[in-house]
Image 1 (cartoon, helix red, strand yellow):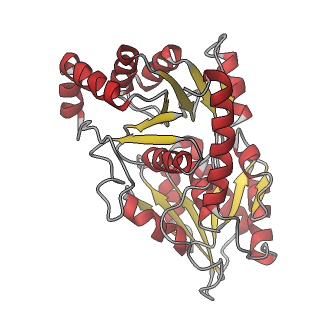
Image 2: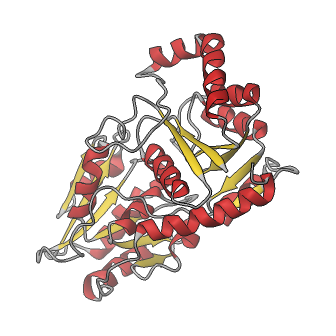
Length: 360
């Protein structure tokens, strides 16, 4: 079977997930996969870009996005012709992005069925761009089937009546690899290093983290970094004022993610809500310890990870788990090979796709 995997986001975990998915599918017997990424994506502009047979020029800002939308009639014909040459049996949208309806229309013209990997059924508070969820749900309704990464999201899709009589394929979120595996936690021999990483938005529960650290009190053997991008808030300022805490409100480019993860001994996911977590997937691949709140799909994602500890989404529970990590950390062990985990997930995904659509 021949597959097309596309992900037209420029930044964040989407392009990395799409590239990893395509690579894992290529490793299967009897399967070939073509990858399409945004030509402006950070991952393609880096020093070790993935194999991408169909780079697509998306946009570099709002003006570029508007120009692409206005050029849809011309782009649609060209893209459909390209798809007829590639002749995929099935296409997979690895994570929705603003211009996906163009690909959906081109696939329809070329007679190619497609699936959408749904990472979030709802927008998180403070997340997204105007019309993001409207476009995503329009894309989902045009798809021939959906793929969910957790039972939590699958339940939300059914509740929203977005599945209907179409296939809903279940898979997992394998580890996301950003560079070579770093040394094991605490190998540096210094203070315990805690990292809160990702978008600095309300659903990430930074207020829970701030209150948990207040309850925990200053610890001379612990240092904490909060790294990511988002609006400046009183919570961020409160974190800055805490002893041992630094806040870096900035976008972390693709090339720097591995280094930020390598600095940490443990990732702290203080979420108030979640579908599943790309940060957790990256932490697992980097062999970091994880302390996470028991919310949404994160519980499913981490419940069998020996290096992860789950707590209630309250300051007291989070503070207690951080103290337990400080005084009685997990044994630092080698994790399963992320490539093997991806291979297993791709094998199961292809089994389900073949059962639904046949072998092409």
